[in-house]
Length: 221
Image (cartoon, rainbow, N blue to C red; front, top):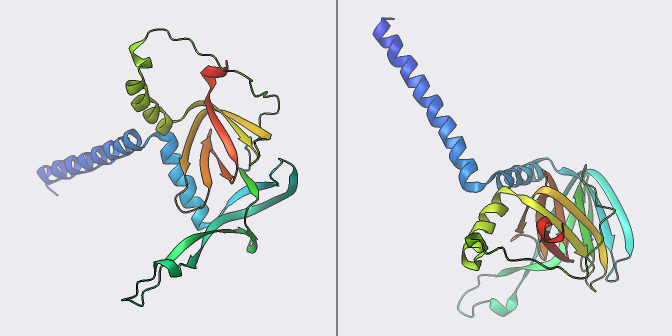
């Protein structure tokens, strides 16, 4: 092969490598590190299942059952909604029900109404955390504390993950447990009823049918 052709090939390879690196950088920049790893975790969970411990509580915060498994997933159930059926069409409409199916190593649990906390293996509650009765914050006068600016800034920080404390409570408001992390990201699960997913330092936490607060660590420290 002539030297000119070799140079062209090397240049094309370098261009492709550069484009790949920049594409990866853009994905991380736009989606955020924590958000990106949350998507990876979600893909992994849907394909092979993730290893979780599931703690089930009643409305008063009492632990009623603990379940563990190596491959665990949770899915919604859909039911026919006759109230939305068009009189001019035989098309059926389906809506998300309150029943969720938990698959544990190939076996199933159907649940409705209970509070369930899904903790990925390696994620542990903060045992020494005490929920404060009052939170006081001092205004330093910084421009970044302006509500319109801080709202946008905090959404950006959430995508990358930031130091936060997650306090989980029963549906009657009784404290159950708390988690803390340096990189905490959350999102509401559109395909699961009353469920919020969090990533805490790379580990997944699903909160199903529970009250909770996600507090910036700076407000407590």
